[in-house]
Image 1 (tube, rainbow, N blue to C red):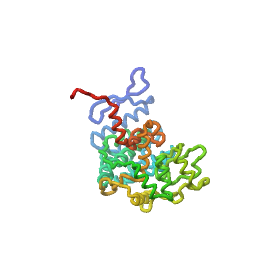
Image 2: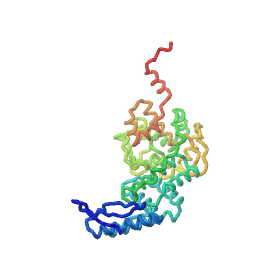
Image 3: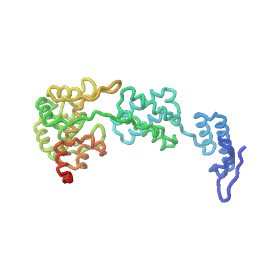
Image 4: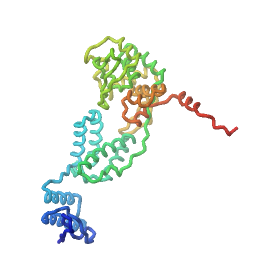
Length: 382
């Protein structure tokens, strides 16, 4: 039976009992009413007794905490299960204005994690998820052919969901924090050369693909955003394009270069929601029959050299180092090679971070040579 006492000038009752090691300890119950303090002390002693006997399981711990909260505060301990936490995180992303494309990337990650741990564990308390389960899932992703970069992305998404649960007090520790990222090896996209772009425009002449290439070269917009452009987004008088990229869902007001304005002025003018490129508008970008594969065939006809990356197995796929997305790399790299400041380049490309922007910046060899020429000779070797 625990003993209760109160220190001078302290409103709280202290409990004296034997802990899980059998040692006599004194601990404040943080309760000012004797009856409530006794309930806390009895609960502690009962838990310590079970722990000494090796009977304090995860389920028993949660039960003890739930009973303690109900007895002292009248509130019920909220212990959502794993799938409820992950599903709730997606709902929170949507409620706070997260892009639909972001949610679409997160959902398959959560689905694969829940499938990995199994239905029974998915219904268990979020607090019961272990480091080994997180690590096991990451390793299973790698074994299935997912790249290191994608595996780290998945781990980061899970970490964010668990951090949200931690902020709500549903877990004390985030198991993802103990799992290290893996080394990343990715096949970097290459920008198109001027000869590549000339060949693409020549081959696509008279088609909507020609216009799509011109727009991407001068704006760096992604394929899905170029294909979705309507005349309502074009202000020829002001020389601007208003675009809300599918990936970020953040509105951008882009200035149009003279050549882009000239090209758009040469097209039959449309009104309102009429698409700029009707044969591309509303179509999917990926999968067979998608716009990405169609652009790949255009590159073949234009005889553009397209190296392929490392061979992948499982869910991984061998990628082309040049695709329509390379036009975004081309746009950023042309700005960098023209000595446009990085902050201006980031604004034009819609990049939020320096790290993301750096992946799109490919300095021409001549710029590197010019940089070396600015250094003074060291001498002393003659």
